[in-house]
Length: 416
Image (cartoon, rainbow, N blue to C red; front, side, top):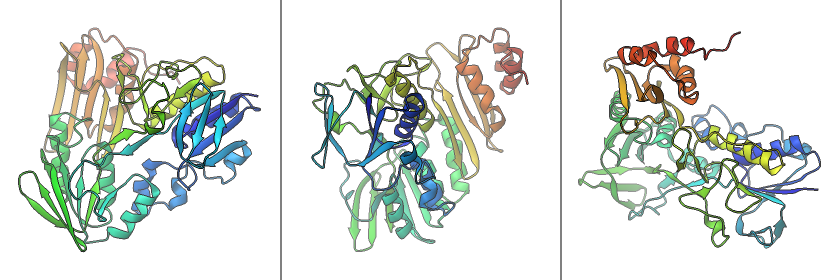
């Protein structure tokens, strides 16, 4: 009987366990998580904060007996170390679990910058259900809230906070909002939209100190501007959870290094999700790409290989869709462009609509959009299909809105 141990019970860990069970009905499968709650989705926490769902609505599987029925053993503990020679993991409760195949799906954790006062009680993160409970107790209509970070996750948190009715200010050290997702034009457009919706945004600025005096926090920015607030939300990015891998011999850089089969440098040990530094689609570079669709696909591929069914990844693919208080923006692939490549752009500032296409020769390799939701599937298909556009490239440069016609002309649409 094959013995599988999965560290991490987020979306990647859950999909891996389910995939393993679907292939091998007799395998011994253990799923380890370090939070008391059933496996849940962090991406559902904003919906919890605005009251659209209860805590149970964040659970990845709604049936309480789901994992019991699959005969997946659930362990609540933290992994302290991995011994790849003994093929075992040591838990913080002192127990040791042995494995034939191991999956590291430990996800990531919020980064808290080394700023004086960051450990104050009024400074909160928004990553766990416990965090969500603290925010719900602290952020009320009229509360004064300052959020640090306006990246992808930060903007999702910001929208949930805004719906709770506070006076909200955002501070982003980058020169624009969502700087790792959108170019300067798009980031500036999102900022103007936020200003219109009553969220004050400071870009190119950073917090240098936080002082708590009873219930009031005084936040000072690098230009001397000060804010007196009730709550500070830290949303300054995440990093992979790698601590338990120290001394294991598993190769790491910014994350766990994996090949196209999601196997690490140690045979029989795999990794998936936010913790991985995987090969990127289109560039061949290893990169962190902490988005749930990638995590789930990596987990599926890892599980297939763990069960002896060879499967290879086409590479992690940048694909983000962000709803900022009703303004939909997207980024695809190499949206920043490539050396020697060119762009096509369509801009309607007044109506908050923007479309920019990035080319490498006659290949569409990336895109940014705002307000053009009708083109999402077409853009992804053209980029991931590595479709040679030929004469259609000139047409797209002249009219970027012709992407659907290009898609159809290249025969990418399915015949119904």
